[in-house]
Amino acid sequence: MSGGTRPAVLWLHGYTMDSTTWEPLWELLPGFRHIGVDLPGHGTAEPIPAGLTLPALAARIADRARAEGTERMVALSYGSSVALQIAVDHPDVTERLVLAAPTLAGAPPEPHARRRYQQLAMAKRITGPGEQLADLWMASPPDIFNGTERHPRLRAALREVIRKHSWAELDDGSMNALTAHHHSREDLRRIRARTLVVIGDEDMPTFRRNARWLAEDVAECEVLSLPETGHLPLLERPEAVAGALARHLA
Image (cartoon, rainbow, N blue to C red; front, side, top):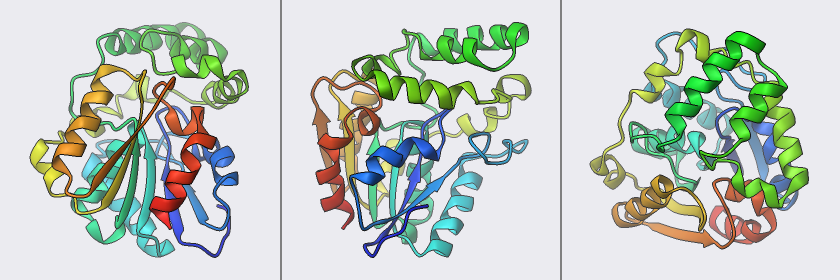
C-alpha cells in the first residue's frame, strides 16, 4: 500500500502476477492512496479455496474496498473479470472503474490459450514451478506477453514475479469454479460505474471485442486505445496512461 491525500484506489493484477507489478505506475500517480490486492493463489495471498466462485471472490474484495473507504478500482486482464463482477454486484464500491485488457468471465479463451494450459500442466509435473514454467507461460502464442518484448526491463521483472507463482491451480483445479461464471451483455448494462477501458491496439481479438462491448453496453464508458501496445497496456505503457488514469480517478 502507498499513501496519499487524494482518493484511495484498489488495484487488481493479472493472472500469475501480484500487486508489486503496479509499483512503476503508482510512482506516476502520486497523491493517491494505492491499495494493492493479491488475488487468491497469487503473491502473498492464501491459496484459492476449493469451490470459490467469482461472485464470492467479488464479495470478499468489495468488503475490503468498504473497509478501505474506496469507490475506485483499477484492474488488468484476469483482475478485470473480478472487477466487472464487483461493479455488477456491488455498485457502492465502484463509482470509478478502470479496466485494462477487459476480460469477460465465461467467454471462449483465445485459440492458443487452452493448448498452453495443457502444456503448463504437463511441464509442472516434470519440472515443478519455476523458471521453465515462467518462460513457457510468457512465450507466444498466445500473445499475452508479446508487448513486453519492447520493454526488456518490464519483461524481466514480470518473469521474476511469475517464476515465484505456485501453479497449484494446475493440480487442484481450483480456478474451475472461478472461470465457470459467465458475464452476459445484460450484466454489462447493469454497470453504473464511470468506466475507462484501456486496450492495446495489438491485443488479441477477444479483448478488443470485449472493449467494444463495454463501450456499447456500459452507460458511462470511455475507451483509450494505445498504439504499439499489447495485452498489458498499464504495465507496458505506464507513462502513456498515467494522465488519463489520474483524471479519471481524481
